[in-house]
Structure formats: C-alpha cells, structure tokens
Amino acid sequence: MTPTPSPTRSGGNGLLASSRLLRVLRYPDFRLLWIGAFLSFTGGRVENVAQGYFVFQMTGDEFKLSLTAFAWNLPVLVFGLIAGSISDHIDKRAVLIWTQVAFALNALFLAAATYFGFVTYWEILLVSFLNGLVSCIEMPTRQSIVSRVVPPEELAAAVPVNAMTFNVARICGPALGGLLLTWTGVAACYFLNGVSFLALVWSGFAIKADLRSNQPERGPMKDLVFEGALYTFRDPRLRTLFVLETFTACFGMAYLPLLPAYVHEVLGMTSEAQAKQGLGFTYTAVGIGALVGLVVITQLADSPRKGLIIRLAMWGMSLGLLLLSFMRAPLLAYPTLSVLGAAAIMQLNTTNALFQLLSPDRLRGRVLAMHIWALNGLAPFGVLLSGWIAKASNSGSAISLPFHGVSLAMAASSLAMAIGAIGAVFARRGLSNLVYDPSAL
Image 1 (cartoon, rainbow, N blue to C red):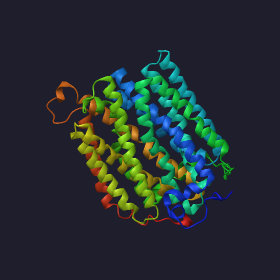
Image 2 (tube, rainbow, N blue to C red):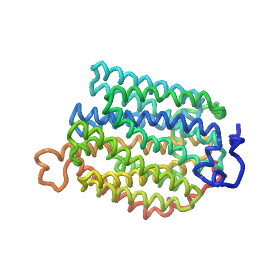
Image 3 (spheres, rainbow, N blue to C red):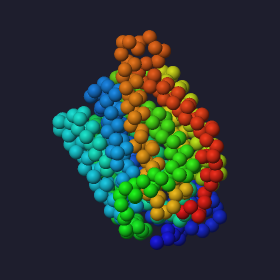
C-alpha cells in the first residue's frame, strides 16, 4: 500500500510543504509511529536516569555501571545479524506489538522488585540482558517500518525525523526522570517506563500500512545472515560507514553509562539530592544537543556533503570528550555534553539514513541490522574498557596521574575518536557519492 499524505495537509507551497522537518508528518501512519515511539522512549529515558543512579548508589562501582550497559548490548553482538535477517521475513506489526509487551513486563517486574525491596544488582543485569535480546529483533523491525509508511523520495528526511522521537525524549525523559526520582523514587520510574510501552502497542494496531513480509520464502539461515553482511562489506561506502560508526559506538558513546559516576566524582555532586538533579541535567544536556543536531541534519537531508558531516561530527566528539575530562564546573560541562550529543546524532543518523538509502528493499532489514550491530553489538567492548579504566585508575597506584577515574576514561575515548576521525579524513572513496539514488531502493 502506497503511503498517502493527510488530505488536510498535503497541498500548498508554504512552510509546511517546503520544510523537510515537517513534510513527512503529513503521512498519518508515520505520525502514529512517531507519537508511539516518542512516548515509549520518554519512559525509557526516565528509567535510564533512575537505574543509573540506583546502580551506582547500590554498588559504587564504575565497572558495574558499564557492565549493565554491556549486558544489554551483548545479545545484539551475538544475535543481531540473525535477528535482522528474520525481520525481513516476518510480519513487522506483530513484532512491534509483542516486543513492546515483553519490554513492559520486564520494566514492571523491576518496579515491583524495587518497591517491595527484593531487587538485586544481578536481577537488574538479567533484565538488561533480556531487554537486549528482545531489542535484537525490535530495533531493525521498528526502523525498517519507516520505509513502509513514507514514499521512497521522503525516506532521507523521514529517517532523522523518526530518530527525533528518541532524541526529543532524551530532553523530556531525563528532566521528568530527575523530578520523579526525587519525588517518588526508583520504583515509580520503572513503573512509568512499563506503562509507556503501551504507546507503541497502540501504534502497532493503528497503523494502516501493510507491514507483512514481502519475502514469504526463506533461504538457508546462513545465507540470510551473511547476505546482508556481504552486501555491506562489498560496497565501499557502506563498509566505510560501518567502520567509522563502530569507532563512535565503542569510544564516542562509552561515556554515557558512566555519567552517574561523572556527576559524583568529577562534578562533585555527592549528596543524594545533588546527584539526582545533576544526573537529570547531564542527560538533558546531551538530549538538547542531539535535538539541535537532528534539526540540522534534517535540513541537510538532500545535501551531497554527508561525508563532511560525518568527519566533522567525529572531530567534534573527540574534542568534546577531551574538554569534558578537564571540566569540574557543571555550567561548563553541560554545554560540552550538548556538543557531544549533537555530534553523535549527526554522525549516527546520517549513517542510518545512508544504510537505508544505499540498500535494496529486499535486503534493507539485513543491511540495517549491520548498522545496529555496529552501534549496539560492538559497543560493549568500548563500554567495558572505559568502565575498567575508570575503576582501575581510581586505585591508589594511579593517584599520581594527571587524570584518573572517569576523567581518564573520557580522555582515552577522546584519543580513540581522534584516530577514527583521522581515518575518516583519508577515507575519500568510502565517503564520496553518498547521494540519494532512487534506483537503489
């Protein structure tokens, strides 16, 4: 079924018709997906603030903070490519609905366990692993739905607008999470997240587009898995995007799980009230930057200079992480976190759009799974390394270093990102000819 714009919004030559940011919202099914995802992601960010605070208060261990993120990412590493292959061959509506139900049950379990006082760190770790397992198939399925609810010529604009659901939620969610954490505690944050998944369940039922698989016959699983990987690595553009995104996932984003420790150790917010409020502000600062970055790349959706965007974003992350490792004042740290949020989202969402635009429809779920695998499946190693550096350098033997703890972990990530950015400068062939081509769809 060809997506059609809403009759009341489709015409005219005014701002609505010309704005890349708004034009895709004319499509009713896209609006349903956007609203459901935004509400669900807002709940997720509320939980993220509460869980980061809770785990660090429970353990006081930077490595265990990283291990919680690792537990979520590990299933994506192991099963991500298989799940991407499966997502091309099953009903996307059913996947969207049932995965949200699974997420909701996990969040509600943690809400009950926290409220009644029997929750342990290992239960949080197990739930993170189970959520990662469900995410293996939920992420490529949800993202590939975008190409079903907008026409091909709008896909370059629709991908960053769709990603805005997550990044607007990164502003609203942490602010709400900080307040809810202070007023009602951790259990209420878990409960709100559990309820928020009903929004995407509603969207799954309400979307009218045909979300059934257009590939009813499956080949051998081995071929299904490796076909997407081979297509990615044979195309020099996709191969380069994959490698550069892996650098960012492993090193440029590794600071995020360590923010609860950063607020406590580096910014000096040691009291309970300060830590809760400061953590909400740090996540919100990242979200504000991400939203600004999304607005910029949405307006540049038709620009042929996407390679330059990726290069500048990687240099921005390297510089931002280095500055953050020096900073001890919250009023300086928050703008720097916004720069990191903007730079990361400009690279990752540009890459997301290119993975979809440069792949044929029959392979889109599998090729998109490679993007998700780079972003989430390979990231655990960088996250664990950063957590280990932060913990090990806080020992007595490291006290003479100019940096230690979370600051040293961020400086090391900055160096790694600089190496990746230098590679991007020389990757001329891989970052050229990144232009929307309808024949690729």
